[in-house]
Amino acid sequence: MKNIFVCKRFLKSVLCLIIMTACSEPSTSSLAQKQATKTARQATQVNQSLRKNRNPISLIDSLQISEYIRRIFQDSKGNLWFATNDQGVCRYDGHMLTYFSIEEGLSGTQVTGIIEDRQGNLWFTTNGGVSKYNGEVFTNYTETDGLNHKWAWSIFEDSKGAIWVGTMEGLCRYNGEGFTSFAWLYPIVDILAGKLANSLIGCITEDRQGNLWFGMGRQGVCKYDGKTLQHITRKDGLCDNSIVAILEDSQGDMWFGSVFGGLSHYDGQHFTNFNKNNEIGNNEVWSIYEDKKGDIWFSSEGFGIYRYNKSTKALTNFHKNEGLLISAVQAIFEDKEGRFWVGGGNGLYRYDGKTFFSMTKEGPWK
Image 1: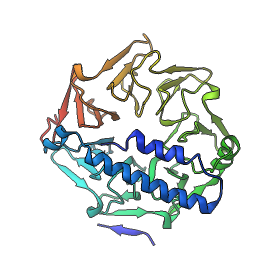
Image 2 (image 1 turned 90 degrees about the horizontal axis):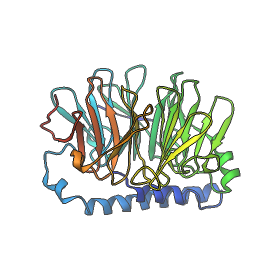
Image 3 (image 1 turned 90 degrees about the vertical axis):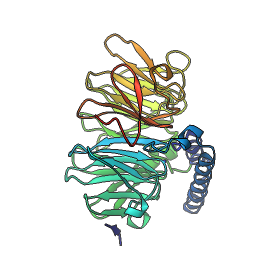
C-alpha cells in the first residue's frame, strides 16, 4: 500500500562507488541484493564525510538557499523548484520560498530529478524513492510499489505520457498504480560487460523521432525505438561510458556528458568530443543545456561552465572572473522570463548577461 502524506552534490566519489561496484559482481539475485545494500551503505558514508567537510563559507552564509543545488525546474504555473542535496526541494512562487522534505511528506532529503506530468502533478526522484505531488499531498513510491531500488536517480515523461524512472538498479516505468521494472536493458549489459546487470540509469531523454535514450552508469548509452535497442559506447566514438547527462538540441543533434571523458556532440553520424586534452578544463560534465538562442551550455568540474556557439564554434568559459563561485555545477536552466540560473556546490547563481551573482533567500529575484 502506498504511503500518502498531506543534497555538497552527490559527488563523483559517490557515483564512482555505485557504477564501479555495479560492474564488479557475478550475476545472482542474492549477490545483487547484498551488493545493493553495500553500495547504499557506502554512498551514505561518503555523504556523511561530505557533510563533515563542508565549505566554511557555506556554513557562515545562513541566507543561502541551500549549500548544494542539484536541479532547477519551472512548473506550468511559473513556480521555480530547486532540488537540494540534503534539504529536500525548495519552491519559489514569486513571493516566498517554501521547503519540502521528509517532514512534509517527500520521500527523501536528496532530490535528484524533477518533472511535471501532463496532468500537472510534480514528480521527484530522491534517495528514498519517487514522490508525486498534486499541489496538496505527496504520494510516495518505494520498492514495495515496484521500484527495483529505493534510490531513484532520473525521471522522464515521454511523448506518450509514460513516466520512466532510472534507479541504481536499472529502469522502471509507471503503470498507473506502481512501477514495473524493465529487464530488457539487462541482457545487453550482461552480454557486453559479462557482469551483474544492475546498471545505474543516470539520465533519460526522448528525441524528436520518439527514440528514448538512457545513460547507463559506466556502460554507455542505450537508444530504444520502442522495439529494438542500440547500445553506444566508447568503441563507437562516445567520449566515455560514464554518461550522466543527455540533451537533444534544437537541430536534432545529441549531446552526452560524462564523469570521466568530457562531452560528446553527435550529429547522427559522427562524434565530436570535448575533453581536458583539447577544449575544456575538466572531464566531469554533469549538466548540459541549450538556451533560447541555441547556444549549448555545459559544466566542467572545477572550471565553472562553458558556452558553445554551434555556428561559430566559439567556446567561452565562465568561472570565478565572471563571478561564478560554484565548485561543481550540477544544474543549468533558463526560465520562462529569460533569467539564467546555475546551481551546484556553493549554492545558486544567476546570470545577468555579463556576470554571475549569488542568489540568497532574500534574492534578488527580479
